Length: 338
Image (cartoon, rainbow, N blue to C red; front, top):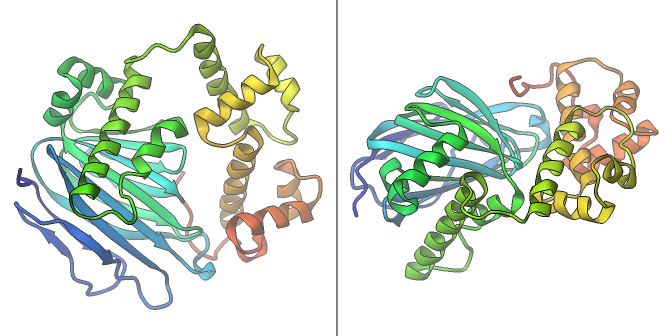
């Protein structure tokens, strides 16, 4: 089946860089370098047809420490589609921002947050936080294709559950790591030709099945599992707003009426990280933003994030980002939108 979409990818990274044009009937785009200015980073994109009206995009970009805290506009995608389009944007690493003009929304995606589109045409800008390497996978297909794969009623329920029932709309959703993992594995290394195509198709269908199962109810968890899923969801919300020291695992488990082992395993299964690793990643990201936007003393910032000593904070920050927090201060680059 030849693609019926027609669109352009305009690079915003280098003055005078040539745009990529994808007319109707466009061919696969193998690894193509992103035109970043010399010394400002490197990256590449790939774009493939998966058959059955599905397309797969993979983009990776990394930047030098001198660009820490900057929000880099990479490209603008504009074009037409023959039917309403369903899109999924998921980050394996890093943080990105989508300015979805068709839906009138500006949304952030990162490892634990997936972005979904239900749009009548393509018109969005893609930006990335240059503080760390960013790897994003995008799957697109016509909404009728989604209905063919899942069934019309389940597809409608899925769009409703994702918060994008109307045309045009976009929304983000927190999803378990067990669901997003198959999407990140859609483009394998070392496979070529028909085998690569079949593998990518299988992983995409695996992702759609898992997405529908968890949001639409294709499979009902056991009663105990259902309670644990709700508990870890509430725990995640609590941890995101928690300041200072994190309670012990036994205290957390007691407050949610379960065992420490069960809570820990359920949280890791749902979000791909241990409870304390999740808190650490979130707080370090918050610290990075605070350093870029404010003049808050580092000692006060470390204390508010639960570090017993500022040196512990500095060591954790350096391990996470590869450079010390002192190199990130207000005025040394942009920041993510609120």
